[in-house]
Image 1 (cartoon, rainbow, N blue to C red):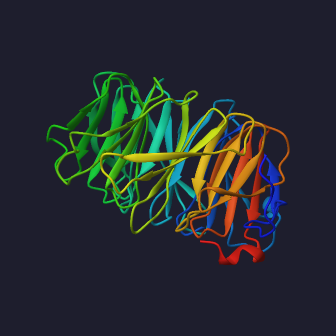
Image 2 (cartoon, one colour):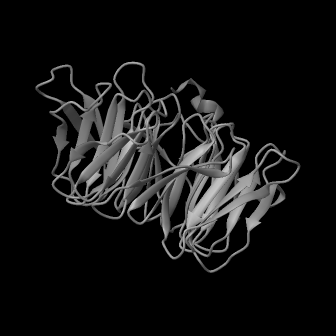
Length: 365
């Protein structure tokens, strides 16, 4: 195991923590960092008002939904932070309005018995896309109405991702990827075929590259040329298992891509020589399956979390700095605060934890 460095990026002990009803399935920060939301496998949805002073999360808690014994699997905030949407195994999407005196339910979308597994907000508008079975629907919180419904056709939808411009919606499943234009939803989608099902999708921050993973453990990076993908994508293989997590660094030049598979974290960088393509460096700091990787906003500080409860922090996406103090238990959700001053993580025992930036590490970018 690498030796710890002395200059810390986060304070090792959680600044605050709370135990929720069950296994935490998802957490999300509002873009303005005012709210942190968490959902559990028992159907609980908890909202924490981070604008309130103090470290006691129970004093900041707003219970949006008490446990229902039906899992909530996805949730997220609108770009302006005024709306929160959540979906799960009861086949419903619930939307809360957050800009009043108290959060209030604005709408409930009933999709029958189909689980809602993927939900992602538009980068700028108060619209979100979510999947149900073989369909993707875009819904507007402002008009409380459907924008469009698209049929993926080949299979159940396994992944959805908005282009950072908000002008493209990418959808993955069996046979590859379809990309619809938000300027004209009736236009036929651009299709990118894959030999097996696409299970994860993520655009880089400027929208030049889309990374996809497949169920046969292949990673494909496609360059977007403005109207279509480059016909010769980069393919990376040889991973020890399922690709569990992706994240892109925010970079004005060439972004870094972090991926996790098995106990390995690989950081990819595009080589100046196009014939070389993307080169990966394995960074080792885990002895169990790594479920999450995430770059601190506007930096190359990387966090990685595994199923033994270990969270490692890396400087420059390669140098091991520290492990955070956590209870044993699989990390089931992890996300940096958008301002980069805190890291939130949760585990299979329902524990939600927040770490704050160390005064030692203020020089790190």
